[in-house]
Image (cartoon, rainbow, N blue to C red; front, side, top):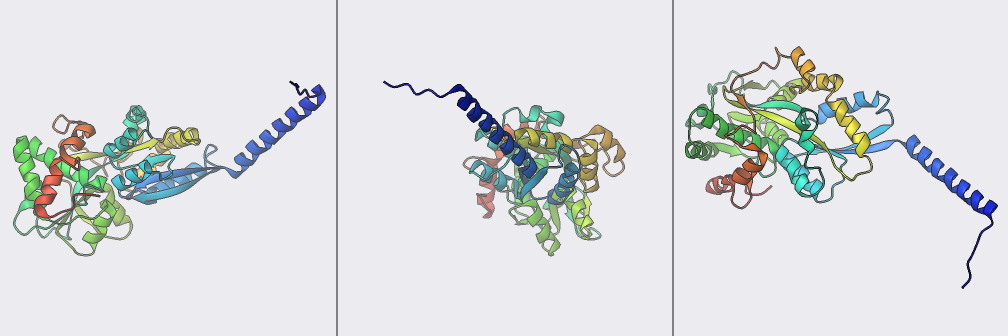
Length: 339
């Protein structure tokens, strides 16, 4: 056996060269900056662009660029689970984040972060035609004869899931039993004339002239106004607080910088931008500035209300593709049963 040995001075030179090359590689990477892959649901595309620009003006974000993908929330979550590159996600339901938890891509404690992992809020509203000719005010008005309703497909869109849970929860809070509230959903979907893939697509269909009322986000309606489209809307007495989660994917090399971006999203500069684009701030300091724009309403309830039971329970009861209530309702009206 021969043991190869290297003279000490030569070994030191090689070690030194290796260290120099490693330092150069780090310096080159730093100069090139970090690219963050953001995958989000459809509505916040414009405001996230503004928030990213604001972040890039800070010392922490000045060398960071972003690759962005926006679409129907549940479809986006499935795409990430199936391999779409993402460092962080901004989705429309905790249900869609849980899908990524179950895929091993997001930590199960994502909702233990600041503001329970939520980046911004909004509420379910009824977008109506100018002057509200059908006099839509409450949930029972949606099932009057001749009223045509638009809401997205619950198997592709997070917005649709919020609409369904809001409709069910409103009936329960008005004193209906579980059976009666479910029957209301069955009747409501007999009035649904369009189920687009996403909340944004549903808005476009409504703006094209179809239907009398669109179940949508308050933020979606206000965003449409910013784009010059005069959408009128009604907030029903019983409505649902839509909590919009933002989370980092684990085991990715950009995790630290992505977490810093999320911290920025919840700070006043970004929260103020959210408010300007129609979203309700989760930062209480900023929220106080916009109480006139976003008044508190006693009838607003959350997904963790006991009548809903949280996202895990709601998903099992309502949106399971095999045994959920919505599969049965959609089959009965000839609607979609997949995303």
